[in-house]
Image: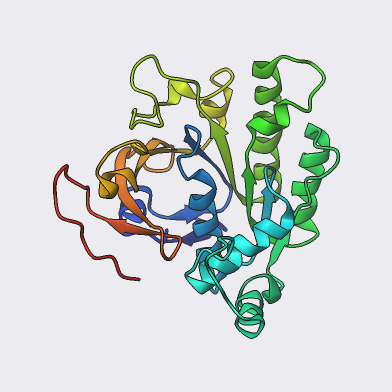
Length: 280
């Protein structure tokens, strides 16, 4: 116990998250859970881009199962440009586009998985292991674990999700990586997640396996149908499980700026309150 730990601690890009969680650590499995359209993919892209620009972070692996690698690349470049480059009304010349490519994909620190083809559990596990051991990726993101279930032959979602989560947990221990995976939630009995319903561990898809095997579970909540644009575009980041320190609850609030395409830490919005200014 007196030997120095080989875990790597890096602060989150948002102060509230770091205060509650003590930062991002290697050797951990982190699950990001939310309903549909709650900004889970943008949340992990922000984390990946932040880690890319953190000197001690190492290489990053991205397995974005719902989008082609061209879109993943453009989304990462958008973070560098502070503009949503995928939108038709956003213009950027080739010279500037190259600058943002060199700042992200051109660094040689990001590795993308082309999900077109076989997405069996064993194939994904082997890809993650290769990213960790062959490409020296310390931080790997999977968006999302639920999509792998549709490619399995058993037809039993609970069994398939438990199998994936167990193998990923074992792989994290084997390789010492920090592994972030997105998981969809079951529909709650009351207010829908898309209308601001609270997240909980009991709503994770499958059995309790994902929640039990994760070192940390982070829930994203947002009322995407609210009349107030400030509330409609602000996401509550809630720590549902925190094995490291035991601290849970609301960690911070992130406002999505549609002009820059970025998620910025803000204060909790109040209904009818004035919009605040957000700066990088």
